[in-house]
Each structure stands twice: as structure tokens, then as C-alpha cells.
Image (cartoon, rainbow over all chains, first blue to last red; front, side, top):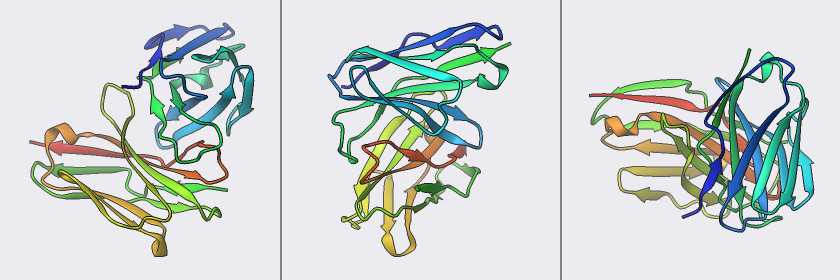
Length: 115
Length: 115
């Protein structure tokens, strides 16, 4: 089974802090994603990576950056956390770049509260 | 641009009732893929089904069935004889052929099945 692991389930951070959300997948997938989930808005794509050191902005990249130094690991970075970034963050991965029909596998999510 | 609409925000049923979750999509791609995911209270999104745009056959898997109609751009999901364990948030999602596997999600439908 594909396993996508997010390092922290629950985090509480202060406004202005730098926050790292870590994600690891164990199936040698090329693609990795960070989504944000908010009530009534569904999941929205923040960033997408299709290879090591390669990244692409999603629909809501403002206030976020990402890092992919190794194929299995994809980090989401909040440079200066703000209260409007309080949300559930979901990491995901899929097998091949360039193939729309890949199934995307999700981690359990990280609940971030910024106070 | 792609769009997925799940008009039903919340549905409440009693156990053993049948329930249908609606999903309507928009895309300019001629090749695309449709997905349904289940999100139980634990938070992880669980993959349920993937259909490609060339396959309009309905699918049944146990108590779950899916009705794909290109003419109305709909991909509806029916649970027969619902059970309390079916209580979850259900998401419909779309990956257009030019999206490189990035999913566009609907807003989600919260299904509550009462004993």
C-alpha cells in the first residue's frame, strides 16, 4: 500500500513564526502535492512538484513556499505564519508526471492553528 | 479552467436508506478523469473510484455505485443501504488531460448516517 506520512498531525504556532510541514511518501512517486482544506471550499492546491527541485504554483501559493530536495520528501513552508493560514493541510503523491489519470494518494493531514 | 460543483453541503439519512451524492463538473479538456474520495473523521482522504472520460459505463462496488453521464457533465455517487460507518465527507474531483494530474476538488458533501 502507498503510504504518505505527514510529520505533524496538530500544530499551534504564533503569528510571524516560520512553520515547516513535512511529508514523506514511500512509493517512489514522481509527483507530490500540498493542498489546503477549508470548510465550504473543498481542497485547494497550494504547490505541486513533479521532480526533485522542480515545483509549480497551484491555485493559492501566496504566503507559502516548498522544498523538494529528495524524491520522497516534500516540505511546505510558511515563511511568516498568519491567522488566515489556520487550516488543515494535506500532502499527496501520485506516480507519473504528465499523466492526468494517476490516482493521488493522501496523507492524514496536518491541522495548523496560528494564534 | 476546471470546476467541480457538489451542490449538497450536508445530507442526513437514517441507516439503511439509499443516498445519492451529486457532482457536476466543467472542463474544456476532451480527455479527463473523475474521482471520488471519502474523508472519515480521522482526516485522511481515501480513494474510492477513478473514471476516464471515454468510459461511461456505470460501476458498482458492493453498496457503492457511480453514474457517469457526459451529456449532463455529472458523476453521481450512490450508497445503497447506508450504514453509520459511511458517515464522512465525500469529495468529487477532476483531473483534466492537460492538468498533469493535479486535481480540482468540489466543496465536499458531509454525509451523516444516523442509527
